[in-house]
Length: 111
Image (cartoon, rainbow, N blue to C red; front, side):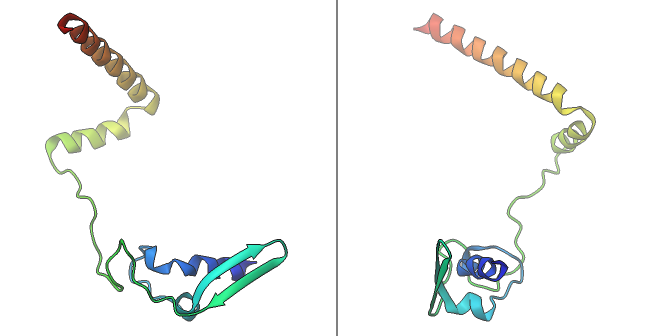
């Protein structure tokens, strides 16, 4: 079963973004795998189509998001480490209720 699971994972090797990953022989030559009760069918054909989302392999290391280096970003990271999650959720919940109450009051007065 582990062998078949590895083959299954390799079928979509082009869509998996792993740094410096080179597809293995089976990743390049297994087109599809079908599973039924007590039966697995492996279709062998070239599987060299490029990804429709990712650039061609091997692609260089990329940074998808930049860290916020502003003072607000640093303060936010420190607060997340110090303030317990339950308190942060309570504050967020309260501010959300206050904001929706204010917006609701404006809508009624204006409409």
